[in-house]
Amino acid sequence: MKNIEQSPKLERPTRSRNVFTDLKYFFLNKPPVNTLVKFKTEEDRQTYSKSILQRLNIGVDRFKMLNIHRIGVEAPVSHLFNELLKWNGDSMCWPNHIAKVNLQDSKLEKIEIFLFGRTKYMWGLKNGLFGLKLFHLFDLNAIKIQKVPIRNDPDNARYLLYECKGGYPIGVFSIYVRTSIPERGEKEMSQLFIMVGFNFYGRESLSKKKFIRRIWEFFHNRVTTNVAYKVKLLTEWRFQKLMNDE
Image (cartoon, rainbow, N blue to C red; front, top):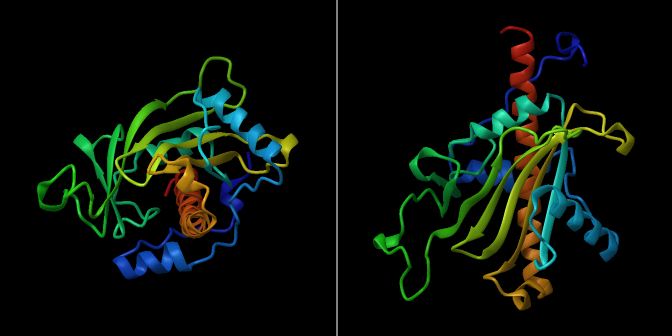
């Protein structure tokens, strides 16, 4: 383990205050780290798909949209995952003024995402007006939250796995953390993965349209990179404070 006390003093990430700073910090800002895992070939994509299936026990091959982001974090896996478990929707690591997070019963098991700070369905209509769900982006229902590593797991992995529904992404979403593997060139203590696999409104035909995919991927990848980078900064900042007994 590196000597945290001799490392340069880290700074806490800046908290967004409104929709405009959400746009600045999460959409316009380009972090120094590119977190998107790119697939050179369809074979590479299938290899990653199989590794996800093995770890999470869920298939992603049926989803046309599959985006995986990865970033190294200089903190133990347990500390990193505990930071993720603290997420209550009011986080400096998420554009909460644009995509408002509403935790059902204040728990991570059921989450609703609304547009522009709303926390309720428009006019109280859960099914929307004429089937159109204005301001309601999607829901996340936990399939499994693995808080401790499984027995004899050499990677010390934990994860949050969700089913996405009720909006444009119908599929799965996962945040996965594990100990770094030096043989793969990973230098930090831990690795953080953010994965989403889905089809637009459940239709593979829509997900195949290039203009839809390119627009969504541009915004999604920029936001996810910023989210992952802010999680890294916040986790490392808090871990440094812990090690220095501040």
